Amino acid sequence: MPTLVTRFALEGKREEVSALRYKVVDKVRAWGVPLDDETAYEISLVVSELVTNAVVHGGGAVTVTLRHRPGSLVIDVFDGNTLEPTSQCPDAEEEGGRGLVLVGLLTARSGWEPIADGKHVWAEIELPKAAPAVRAAALRQFSAARPITADRIVPESLASAIV
Image 1 (cartoon, rainbow, N blue to C red):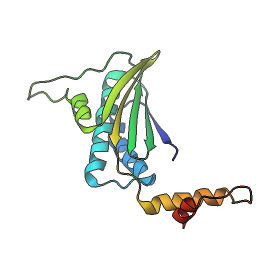
Image 2 (cartoon, rainbow, N blue to C red; image 1 turned 135 degrees about the vertical axis):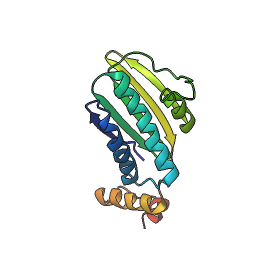
Image 3 (cartoon, helix red, strand yellow; image 1 turned 90 degrees about the horizontal axis):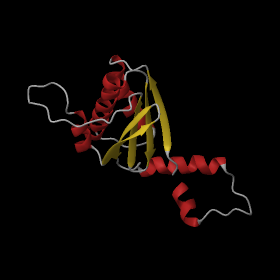
Image 4 (tube, one colour; image 1 turned 120 degrees about the vertical axis):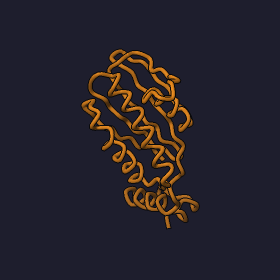
C-alpha cells in the first residue's frame, strides 16, 4: 500500500493549534485507520505539542505533514527556527517545558532535522492497520481502475481478497 500524505499550512498562530488537532485525527480516520479513543487522543496530543513548540519558538509559518502507511503515522512539523529543540525537566509548578518529553513517551520514535531555512521536528506513532473491509474496498477500487486483460492475470489470492 502506498504512503498517504497530506499537508496543513498554518500562519503560526496559537489559535490554529486546537482546530488542527481535530483535523489531523479526522484525516487519519478518513484514511480508514480504525482509531480507538486512546490512540486518537495520543495523536491529538502529539500534534498539539509539536505544533505549539513550532508556533512559540519558530516565529512564522508552520507546515504540518502527515505520512501514513499501514501501522504507522509520521507527524512532521516544519518551522523557520534552525535551533535544536530541547527537552526540559521543569519544576512541578512551571506550566510548560514538558512537550518533547511527552512526545517521546507517546511515540515509537521522534527526532528533528535542521535544514537551511528552519527545521523539521517529527514523531512516529504506531497505528492499528485498516480493517479488512476497508482493505477490500480499496482493492475493489484499484481493480476497477485497472481492467483485467488476457495478458494480465490476477493471482487467485488477490482475486479472493477482492470479493
